[in-house]
Image (tube, rainbow, N blue to C red; front, side, top):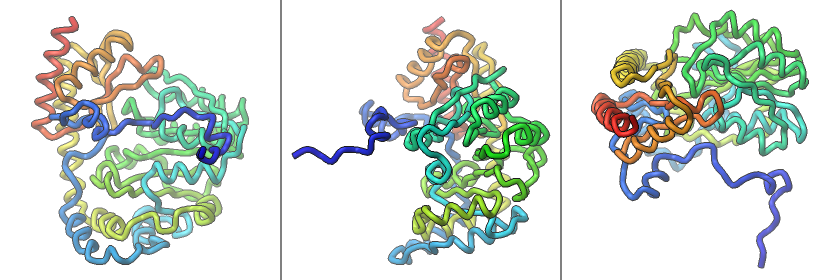
Length: 367
């Protein structure tokens, strides 16, 4: 007996995933990594208060979480100065991307993004049968003028911008982003991915406002708050646009422990400050390691560092493979123009020193 046929759009897609997780890589390798520095996770873990809140909530896991995520939405709305209707919560930014693509994209719709930008967004775009125009980076940063031009030229239904950016770590100023939004057609939805917002000066981000109907901003608890394993994210924008999520979202998708953990994490400013300080120190050390090995670290407003290996994509791939052979997990972009880079996430101090020794050994062999 044959299996039922997939929907035509899905059947035409390759059987790939945006990222192969480190656990899957370890199963293939047959041994664990010594330094896990490739997934842009926080090595410092969640707030102790968040852990305690999750522990208490574990005794109530026989109950579903609040389907409206009300307490968490109220806390976030208060922090951002937004009306409650301007904010929704979901299963991480990736889950929210899947929903927003289902809400706003139909087969054949045009979508604009940067060539080499966060691939999970395009994973969801492909499932809707939309057509992608990819704009090359300029000087290892998003080319806002070219993105806006492409949105105008294609009459794009959606344009994606990560700020701060993944995979380069670069950041555009609030004024630059606001000018970009003004240059995009009114009917184009601007998907503004701010997953790394906590790592940068809030004054460098555009002011929070629900007034513009075609801008939707996405943030997460996976990075600075150290809750990647709980899958928690939120989006905010014009209430009419955000209201669409309630039509098709997974209403019980956010777990009860996750809701409790996020509330506790938001209240622990001291822990967040310590994470940010340790992250900056770690980035400084990784940058120093790069320079010691005659590589060029790029400026970063995130919890990872993009490093220019100084050769072509093949050389950067050899560096990545050499590090993997020494049990160091990092990643690299593959898009032309970015493929000479490797991307190194912040690690614990001991992991960074493992990376430093392994990088020196790999480059000595390659050179």
